[in-house]
Amino acid sequence: MEIKNLQDKVLSFLDKNSNLILIAILIFALILRLKYFNINQAVWYDEATYLSAAKSWAFGIPYEIEFVRPIFLPFMMAMFYNLGATELALRVLILIFSMAGVLFTYLVGKEMFDKKIALIAAFITSFFYVNLFYTARIMTETPSMVFWLISLWLFWKGYVKNESKIYLWFFGFFMILGILTRFPSGLLGIIILFYLLLTDKFRFLKNKNLWIAVTIAVIILIPYSIWYYTTYQKIPIIGAAGFYHSQNYLYTYISMLPMVFQSPIPALSEILPWGGHFFIILLFLAIAVIIFNLIMGYDMLTKEERLKKNLLMILWTFIPFFYFAFLAGQFPEDRYLFFSYPAAFYLVGFGFMFIYDKFKKYSKFLMIILIILVLSFVSYGQINYADSIIKIKSSSYIQFKHAGEFIKANSNHEDKIISTGAPQLTYYSERKVIYWPEEEDIKKFIEENNDVRFIVLSLLEQSPPWTYTWPEKNSDKIVPIEAYLDQQQRPILIIYEIKR
Image (tube, rainbow, N blue to C red; front, side, top):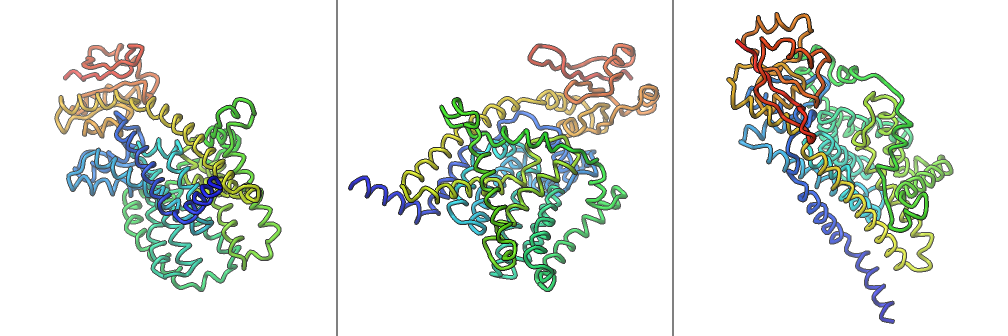
């Protein structure tokens, strides 16, 4: 009887205290993120690109962001710099975005499924290694994912549930912020368009508040478009897309999924060939069930709310995945699937609850305990993996930081550097960095530009092959003044000063 009472109390608590569980998840997420806060000793190329652009706009250091880069993140950081912020404050900003990502994963899941699935998805987001890794990096992935989730939440509240026109108006605002943070955020617009066409036919065109949302987005986009065109003489966003060439990476991304969604259960992962991939199993189970329901209920798609939600979830899962698999042209990385991850977590939660509903007649309490145990084991494995890769990468590119700081301390503002790795060197040295001239032109270039004072050669950011023998052949023109070694005590970056 006591066991039965305990079970009833646990079930009642879980059912009635979703907000307390969410708070516990958020605290857990914050603890994990604080563990790795400011752990990285130097910034990467992408980080430095945005940081250098922010410093350029705030302080006037010589740097121009590439035309393929979105500008909202460096724009935000420039405003923080103008207020006296440091790199530490900018890392706090990314941390806040990451926590908002956990929260809005729950809020969107609660609207589109239920609290149970939303809590499962939020919990997975809290410990997922990709989220932890890029929370420690000042890059666009985490902020753009938050804008994506906020946009979708506002769309659902404003259009689907018709709670307030204000939601829909702000949907347009956050949608364009997402695009200006990371251009592929525009995929959300394609997802929503397909959703509207399949569920509302063309009736959505009569919704004036949706048109107001579009108008708001266009108004925000106009100043950026003018700046982009006058700066690069290219059509905004489309000009950036033209930089990449479509390639088929479908097999590579499919092969990547078991690693990304690794979910080992002790003992089972050693005995069973699929024992380390429970999330993959649940994900595919959910996709199969949802697609089956959509096929069987296609004629009810315009009427039944459950089918509409399922349709949006499938579109959300597959459209970003296939975009990066076929169209993006970027070599596959786990971060490029950032936009699909929340949908995948909802589907994993859906899979959990599908199995729960099938077996709860035997024991609800036992099924809940099993779900908690599986999530606990998986979180342990994912956290360990995140811990290892974050620590391994924490000191990468530290040589560029040391080199940049050395040059800053031993040069004038007008001095220039010939090197690759321009974003990193610019960020740390705050000096103008010029890419290598052609081999036949470099001597003349140095003679005609007296403000070129340093040459930096590294194995971290590859220079043209001929540059690695050029210093030895021209020892009368340059002298090595600083060198940084790798773990095997081999030179990995050398600073040369030009003899004048």
